[in-house]
Amino acid sequence: MMTRGNVLIGALVLLAQLGSGTPGAGPLEQIERSVTQPLPQAPAPTTTPSPDVWTPDRVVPDPVYGGSSVVPGHWEHRLPSGGYYAPPLTTCSSGSGACSTSPAGEYPSPGMRVGP
Image (cartoon, rainbow, N blue to C red):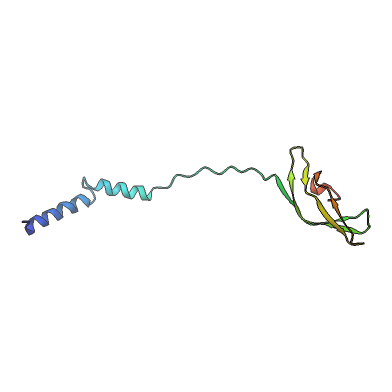
């Protein structure tokens, strides 16, 4: 049977082990250091520019029907040759309302061309 004195001694030994400056304080300090130390930093992600370029809506002269045509906004793919691959585009003339489709293919930079 345990007496009050034995319980008190056991409690004091336990407190001494948990207190700072005692041999038992090491584990608590290790835990505190492990949760307060800075996290390792991940390296910066490497990015490569997208080969796709958004070409916004444009108004271009319509040599066939007169007036102007609206070329709808679309994505173009940058090619290793320096050109751009554009999808087939349907443009409609503001003068006559007639529509035509330009074929898909390689074109110069969107800022340097007059048509689709």
